[in-house]
Image (cartoon, rainbow, N blue to C red):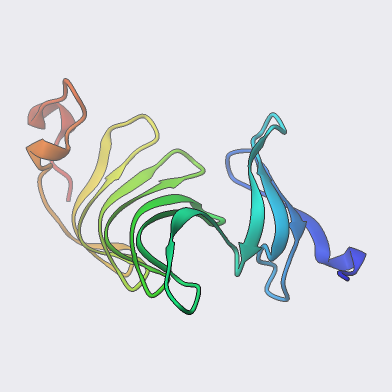
Length: 157
């Protein structure tokens, strides 16, 4: 049985919060729920190491493999997994409204990707390594929001 000291609520940047048990590293662990700012429950379930698997197939060791979706304390990731880590193409929607779309390797944004601001505009585009933009490039036309143009989105460096 968990002690009362292990049960907690973690506040999120969007005004929401996680309510449930935490592990020794203050990560969600066990039965818990993710609440919106208005306190309505967004997702509830069994958390492991700070992650809640919403959908996806698991390998023999219980790790996500193939297409899946999971919540963590940054936001919702939807895309490809290999050995339980983000791998291949995917989209991470952060609690603050920003969106990262692109190529993932080793659980991090690695390769070509786009960061969208919370108002839907392209913030950064280019080559990423370990979640950091390392080489900025122009906005690829296929990634522009409907109705946008290259001149309206601008070039980022």
